[in-house]
Structures are given as structure tokens and as C-alpha cells.
Length: 301
Image 1: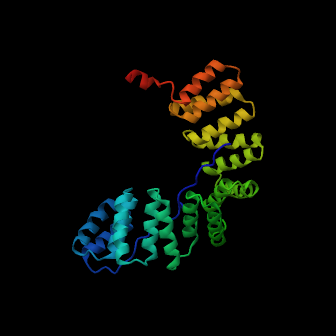
Image 2: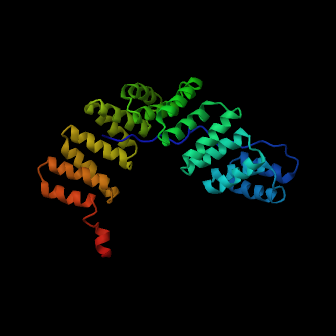
Image 3: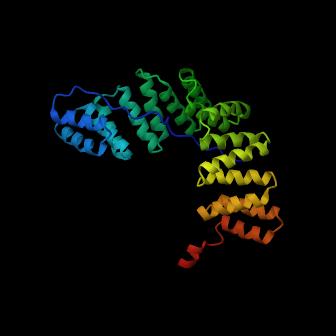
């Protein structure tokens, strides 16, 4: 069966939290202004100089972490947030930021712990509950994730990303009819979201509605032609509809984008089998199983 696509790790609206502080020194005031203006590459060195002489400044460590995270330096940001947490272990904002860093690094268990601690210390908004749900879904604790998504939606009933994440969890839990209802709502709110389109098509396939699934995959690919998982799902759906030539074109493009895509070669082999071309199918299976080198490997040999 086709595979669901994971939704964004956290709400697109949620940003790391910069802590306000009473500014008395010119250097601190300048760093804060640069941070507020989004000039993170300039603010970060200032915070580093401030912290060189004031190492027990939790807000300073947090704000340096904020700058580094916005600059894409998640590991360095995490180290700063950990320093801040040593000084302010119950600060919900710092805990949320630390959780966001762990999410960026794919460390879902640690992220979940941080978000849950933030909730224990008073933070209780839809984005935080959504983030806990995402971590639980990544840890394959699907039923727990669904509960947190429902709690988040009670606070923000029309937030599309949360609805989409709930739908993805319902797909993972194979609760198809509930997932379809959720996905219909998500598609109204996020009509150009590739993951929502893919997951809606996945549900329709599970219900045997291949003719309805195929156009959704096509829409998703039109929006994001380089998405290999959606492309593979689309080809598999076209094969179920006996639209073999179209499926072949979709798979050939997938393998042009990624010549080592084992699942792509496997499915192309199955397609050639269905078309009555066993020799070509065997070549594809050999590529899938790594028995035939790619052109690049052949040249190296």
C-alpha cells in the first residue's frame, strides 16, 4: 500500500521564544535590537561577548540559542539552551526552545520530554500540544499522539497543520474513515499542502477508491515534482488502475532523479511483468537488489 508522508515537525507559525530582559547596558540593548530586527548573525557575537563575562545569564543563553537556531545551527543552539536550563530549569519558554532544537535534530524522545515539562510548568497552548503529538507520532505512540492533537484542536479548531497532523496519525493508525473526514477539512484549509494531498490519496487507496486517489497524487506532484515518495505512490496507484504507460513514465522520472531508488526499481520490475516483458522486469529487479551496478559504479570498476 502507498505510504503516508509525515507533516511538518512543528507548526509553521511557531517560532523559538526570545526572552525579554531588563536592559541596562548598551551592549545588551544593541544585541536585543538586532535580534528583534532578525539580524541574527550580528546579534549572536554580541551575546557571546556578553556571556563571556556573565555566564549565569539564563536569558542571554536563551537569546544566543535563539539566534543560532534561526541561523540553522541547531547543535550549537541546543548547547546554549542546555546552559540556560541549568540556570532556569522550570522556564517553559526555554524548555520549548530546547524541544524545538531536539526536533530539528530528529531526537524525538528528548523533544517530547522538554515539551511535556513545559506543559507541567504552565505552558498550555495549541502549538505546544501539537508538538507533543508530533513527537509521539514519530515514536510510533499513535493513540497518545491522537489524544494530544484533539486537545490542540480544542484550543485552535481551524489550525490546518494540526488537523493535517491528526489526519496523518489516523492514517498511521489505519483509522481510514476518521482520517478521510479529517483530511477533507485539512484540504479545505491547506489546498496546496503536498503531505495532506498524499495522505488523502493514501486513505482513498486503502478504501479501494483508486480513481479518486490518482488525481490527488497528480496534484501533489504538480506542486512538488521532486517528492520521491509521492511519485512512487502515484505510480503504484496508476498500476492498480491499469494505466501502465503513465505509471512507467512516472517511475522513469523517479529513477532519473534517484538512480539508486530500490523501491522504484522493484515497482518498475513489477510493471514490466504486468506488461508481459519478463526480461526487462528481471533487469529492474536486479537493480533493485543491487545485483547490477549503476553506470557510475560501472565506470569506477
